[in-house]
Image (cartoon, rainbow, N blue to C red; front, side):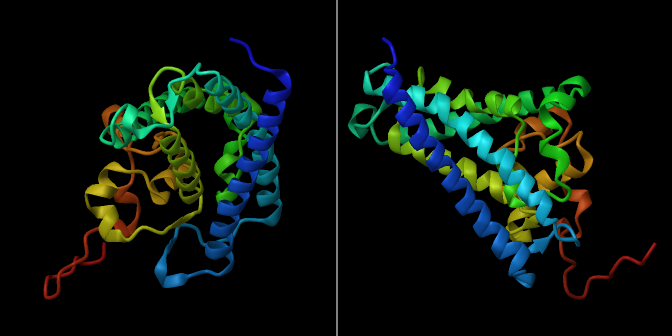
Length: 263
């Protein structure tokens, strides 16, 4: 089974455009709403100063390069799928409707595991300088930082999901859902604003799922909060940090209860 060079090039070009436009639209929307419109009481700013336009421009530049890199393995999988050479499928009845959510959760769990450990690897000093320093140049990060990777880091991130699609069955609709979810989560977690309510953050969801506040601490302190979707690996490996760092994470004091005296 081989790839037709012309078909691959056309698919890769189309995917690069789709990935870049998806990134620009979602990142741009978050950037405009949160940094320009400043919706105040509806969200929790995590930084007092706005990012520079120069920083956002640099992030976009790296992200457009990353879009091409992400498109290449995805295009290879699409061309192989046309020839029946992957585990992707389009008939829901092939595995049953019950398998759709199971497959999505399986892919997310495996992707989160891969991301956690490769992310920790990229924080080893020598690897960091080559691969990961570009991503941490934004302080504070903006939504445009979500895809702002050095090409070597982009390659590491681009190959995993397409490789899974060669072996683990996944409906094409579920694959599209995962890709959009990945982009939305990445943009939201780099927005430097917490858009989820404190009640969610203090509840089950906040204890196990990553939010902007959780990931922002990684950019601030570097040696914590390496996960992508879930806090599971961070909790297991002792690298989790969140609740003690933000006033809005602390439980509200009930009416009539004595308030703690200032220290």
